[in-house]
Amino acid sequence: MSTVSAANAGTETTRLPGEPILPEARMHVVLPTSPVNGKVVHSKLCTKSKSASFVRHVCVDVSGTPLEGSWLAGQSFGVVPPGTDGNGKPHKVRLYSIASPSYGEDGFGKVLSTTCKRLLSEREPQTAKDDPTDHRLFTGMCSNYVCDLREGDAIPVAGPAGKRFILPTDRNAHDYLLLATGTGIAPFRGFIHELFVGPPEGSPLHAAWRPCTANVHLVMGTPYTSDLIYDDFFRQVAKHHANFTYHTVISREVRLDGGKGEYIHHYMDRTLPQFDQLLRSERTLAYICGLAGMQVGVFQTLAQRGLHSGYLDIHADLAGIPPADWTAEQVKRRVHATRRCMLEVY
Ligand code: FAD
Ligand code: A2P
Image (cartoon, helix red, strand yellow):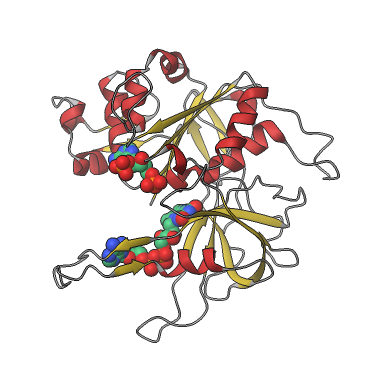
């Protein structure tokens, strides 16, 4: 056990073996109560092929605003749609993960991006007061606003937010297990860019950048193959870097081996030998991003397989209960991610 200055906490603290030193992330340089205008410079569907869901890679130029150069890959930024809600109040801010590396899409920290999924659904009761017979179309306010924007349009933005879901200062001091569902892939696009692609020529960071030597596994879960996001990009990187492995897990298609669709934790469980050594290593950091609730199955699987050490603090109350029998509520209240396990679910 060693004592170090944890820059992210701003205090002297005890660091357990393998715990990362995180860089200091700047937070809320622009408050949602007074957003600044960015400009949409690019917007493109980013699913693998024609999909029932609409997910866009949206790039926003924030040059000349306090957001320029002020985010780290993995942080989020806020969008404050103009206008007012049904009660006449200004729309509240929505957070979107930054899909860019810290040096931006441009290499100068001027253009950030996100991976925005249109919320489109039939209405479902959200409270006891809601009419269960009302099944008209429900369209999310901000996601559709962002996805409707065209190149050249202004977008009111704030942030950045989040100080833990970021890469450690010394990238090569760790190995990485990155687990995503759906748009939870967004921060991992930024991570993979930063670890394996690097700043474009002309960027002040280009000359000093070196590809990461760590082992990185990215596991991405979507309903159908057509829903995979940034799939070509991850395949290209994996082709050129033997230390990067890209896994795709499809929940609603029959697998090539005839097995049924599965969630990412089922896949990890079924193919455990390829993760066993990685998870047992003290160097490894786990990052989990996407659907609220996805951590339940992941945590249960890690605990069931005795691979949770270093990633999870499990309350003594659960000692006699097989992890497969833990309820979602028990996981939420009694299982906590350690500093080697970063969680961003929404
Ligand atoms: P809203 O208009 O706010 O509607 C959502 C609300 O409507 C829900 O809270 C629910 O109460 C209700 N609702 C939902 N479905 C129904 C239904 N069928 N019937 C009736 N009511 C319903 N999103 C992304 O796309 N990409 C990202 O990278 C991303 N990153 C995020 C990072 C963080 C840290 C967080 C917290 C969230 C992130 N989100 C991301 C989610 C994003 O912030 C918004 O919540 C999402 O876009 C929906 O917002 P909206 O304004 O479109 O929907
Ligand atoms: P499914 O929708 O078949 O139940 P998207 O955001 O694009 O819909 O993708 C989310 C993916 O995560 C889907 O494949 C979805 O499967 C899957 N999923 C849903 N619930 C969980 C969960 N609790 N743990 C892991 N994956 C989940």
